[in-house]
Image (cartoon, rainbow, N blue to C red):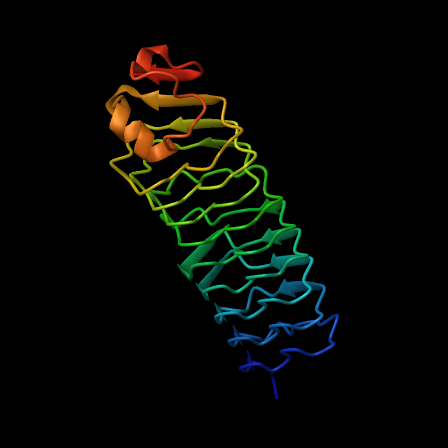
Length: 239
């Protein structure tokens, strides 16, 4: 009988280190490998659904999706996989849950699905080794805490991004430069607070407002030396 589903907690908290998933598999259930000692996983193109916390808190170091698309990648599928270094996601995901890589402290390489318009809540929170991230062209919203306490050194937000959520980039200790696009309509609370390494900001003249900039970057931002915005060192305004 072909295996089409791995059920709820099937291998959770087990000592399994390797597994070869069959090409007949269609679904990986909630917490299927959560807390296991699994080191690597290749998910075949036949899989259409991955449940919430499927690999959370496991010892995964590498995750690869062979398929071009998947219907569902559940919330916090890889949360707290502290040894996970790289993840190759499908190019298109029908529904992607939040907190996907929250707490993946070793993560350095990940691609983001090109069809997603939202980088949701806590997707890359506490990803301390993630020094760079290429924002896909389709992204319109960055959710709350999406990159907080990550290892990003620069952030360039592309045209099309309209909303940044609360604390989206808070406590990014290595962040040195930020570029804000003209299309941003809404900034959440304290988007870039607690970024002590910040040396360069590029922002559209639409955002040239003292109160707004303080709300975004924090009153303790070492770049803000005067109430006259034109006197700020390292800040560039563009039209």
